[in-house]
Image 1 (cartoon, one colour):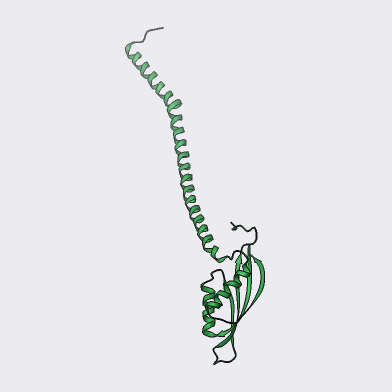
Image 2 (tube, rainbow, N blue to C red; image 1 turned 45 degrees about the vertical axis):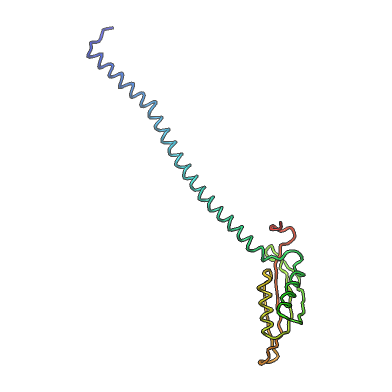
Length: 182
């Protein structure tokens, strides 16, 4: 082999250095850069997924708290225990508060509607109209589980304050083994 002069040796070393840099770039730096880009893209996707999950979680928490509030607000609307006797007691307390002396009570029974039991009682009341008005007020205001479904008022003549009224009250309860029983 012939010996290279210093100029050729410098050019050969320079060529070897460039070749080594190209090999290092192609085989090490470029794949690492590609991996870094893929990792960055995947990290961005996961970050977006986490942000979306956090937003959904916040929304789910708000919905759950709304459900709790609705359950708490509907619980007073449900009669517990024996509904029809409880409704009759509520009606008797309202009649006593309004000073009604005569009231006929007729339980109409129970039927199921939309996962709830509907209990109905019909009241026949004869009294002066202001007393009837007070009775209806006490019946509705003091006994939240009762709903006044229908009120019919009749009078013997147009000048009389004395009226006969048929009042249909309704209350709801959970069926035995219902979801909200605790």
